[in-house]
Length: 163
Image 1 (cartoon, rainbow, N blue to C red):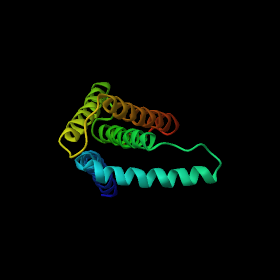
Image 2 (cartoon, rainbow, N blue to C red):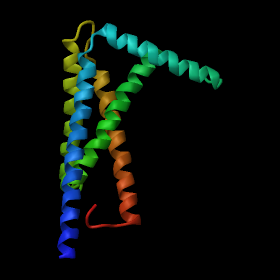
Image 3 (cartoon, one colour):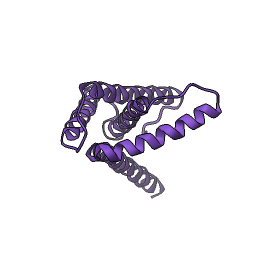
């Protein structure tokens, strides 16, 4: 009976990983698309506030200051890197990272970026940009590749059937 209980606990943990991975990926995509729905004014105010905070910190460190444009592009890259991380975790939880599923993940990343830039075409004062699709997808690939590398290293150090 103890072995059956251990099996049930592992199976429940496995299903919990799947649910959490799917929910986090879905919420990340919603967050990205929500940001695109904001008007240029609201988005601009946030960018100015973040740029000011970053530049105050950089000035205190004696570093070169950054432009608002750079902050906006870094934000694009970062939110998509998070999506790439979560996408790999999603496929890891569901399919154990088979190559054919990673292609589907890459399609999800480019699809999210294309929808994101299309949404901006309909947001007041905003416009979509092909360059942003490339920045977004670059962030996605960077996050996904770093996560794959970490999972590969983890598996080499401690292989486990129930990962």
